[in-house]
Amino acid sequence: MNYKADQKGYYGVFGGAYIPEMLYPNVEELRQNYLKIMAEPSFQKEFQELLKDYVGRPSPLYFAKRLSEKYTTKIYLKREDLNHTGAHKINNTIGQILMAKRLGKSRIIAETGAGQHGVATATVCALMGLECIVYMGEIDIARQAPNVARMKMLGATVVPALSGSRTLKDATNEAIRDWINNPVDTYYIIGSVVGPHPYPDMVARFQAIISEEIKWQLKEKEGRENPDVIIACVGGGSNAAGAYYHYLNNDEVQLIAVEAAGLGIDSGESAATSVLGKEGIIHGSKTLLMQTEDGQITEPYSISAGLDYPGVGPLHAHLHATKRAEFVSVTDAEAMKAGLELCELEGIIPAIESAHALAVFEKQTFKPNEVIVLNLSGRGDKDLNTYIDYFKL
Ligand SMILES: *Cc1c(COP(=O)(O)O)cnc(C)c1O
Image 1 (cartoon, rainbow, N blue to C red):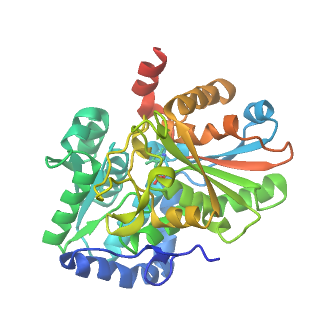
Image 2: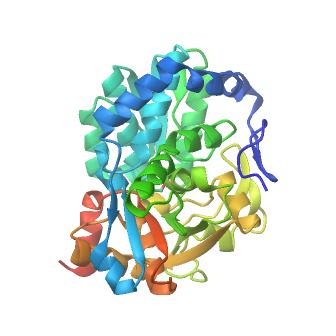
């Protein structure tokens, strides 16, 4: 079984590029060039230097001793939370801003829900001195004031999306409309392994630095490159794709993907796409998504803004269909408890997204000599108000 995208961007039956004709030239320009550009030594040199000196890579692979004792197994945390801007998203935006420059683009657009991808995009635009426009739903702008302020400080223009439910999918529609109207000078930075081909494959390749590092770091610590299990949370799926990437075709490594069950899978307030989703097309890609009987996209819910997405990327739909990865759903309550536990046992405040992955240890038992790598996708600073409200701190 192959788990890499084929020439047309398919992972099994999922993926592809289902786009309006007016977007075709933009996407086709990228498709024809992305692999060639990524293979250029000058591109790789600049990418690797920025990951090292600007992002702060390699991120540590930390043996979590007290957490391991509690669950009587060996748990390593891949510390993406220590990256500049606080999560894995910067790996991708650094890669894509270099891609935009190589394609001669001077204007960058992005969509954002909670604002994390908007901040990561505004950051790299400031770094490169490029104009940055971020589309964000009007409701999200009101809910995520600190991230809106960050984007403005970094020089970005934040444009409210006023249509529909005024959240992420409407912001995405606005960004696509902008791109259609500005095909020559504008590059669209997508924030996860979603969207039309080549985005899912390109973003996975940029995030693959995570598993590339895990291989040599684990070799140093355990004398072998392969963990027994890798655990990661899945919103669109980019941090998971990066943590799995170099192990995808190695069946000895078990993959666990953690989705947000919100208030419970059957509560109507959830984002557990693998359980509730059906095949459909969202943001230019055929994948699993949550939808009504007549195919309208369902509004997802999770306490974690980054997991609050009605679909998953096509790679993850394929990993689910082929059972290569095991999908686990974690509720708000389970995630919050696991997040607090990491604070108390290891002195690390995780992003609530990452706390979903941590909750797996209460739901599954691992053997004492098994080596588990959990991708700690981000830090909890951005979630402090949610933690305060939830635990009445
Ligand atoms: C955005 C985000 C996620 C979810 O996005 P993926 O593309 O699924 O990785 C997970 N964790 C953190 C900290 C995030 O900011």
